[in-house]
Length: 146
Image (cartoon, rainbow, N blue to C red):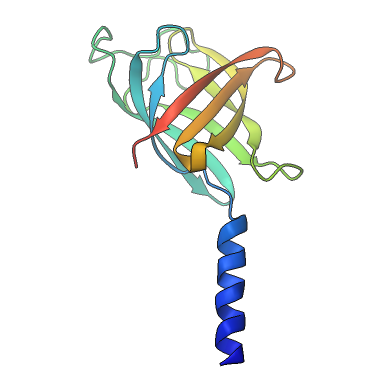
C-alpha cells in the first residue's frame, strides 16, 4: 500500500511540474492585423523542433503562393508545406522557453532568430522573432488547434 501511495505521489508531482510543449498544430495570428494566417504543425525530433505550414488560411493569399523572396533552399517553394521553424531546442536555463533556432517569414523571405514560449496552460504560444537580442523583435501569439 505504501508503495502504491508513493508511486501516486510521484506521478502527481511529475505532472504538476511538467511544462507545456510547443509540439502540436497552431493557428498563426498576424500581430498587426489580428487575422488568421495559417496552420503550422510543430514537431520534435531528437530534441529539436521544426515547424511546417500545413495550410494557408488567409483568404487574400494565393492558393499556389511560393516563397519568392526566400534566399536559401526554400526559395520558390510552395508556402503550404514549407518548413518555417528550424533547430529550436529547449532552453537549458528556463524550462518554459524553447530557442536557439530560426523562423522564416515567407512574406518577406527574412529569417529571424526565434523564441517559443507556451502560455495559458499550453493553449497559446508566444512566437518571438528577432535580430540579435530578443528585445529587438516582435511577438505573435498563436492558438493551439490540437
